[in-house]
Length: 185
Image 1 (cartoon, helix red, strand yellow):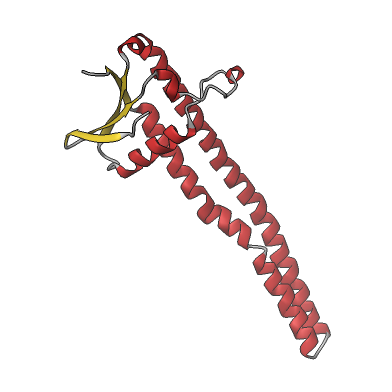
Image 2 (image 1 turned 60 degrees about the vertical axis):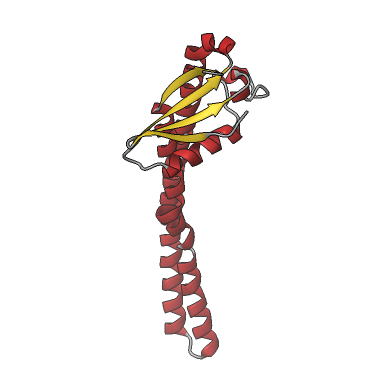
């Protein structure tokens, strides 16, 4: 398999060209077929995602597969398999993003409860006891409560961003026009 080349044929259409010795090179033949889809090699998927990520968002792109002339008869089946796999991956990323938000909401509830308990205990200790040890324990409980908010903040503010970006890139790849060209033409 050769490198994916970005060939700009016009200011608004970018062509990602991939030359293979056989269409079977695109797919991971060790992946189980009982899943109902063919699996594209991870290296190919990641490389295509990198190339699409480097393209301007508002400009269209297409994937050109340069294959042996014998493989041209499989073009429709390969196109369908590529689209199905990319759509499956996009759906996986969407579910992953939903899971992050669900876990973030659960962590937020837990964090708020821990903050509330830590602050109440801290205030109670300050009211009932005097001395530096009591103040240190009260401060420690309050700090522990705020530390419990770290995970919800991480999930709800940051963790979903790369997942959404990957999902959008997969959607862009899945909707891209796929063209086949025989080698040597």
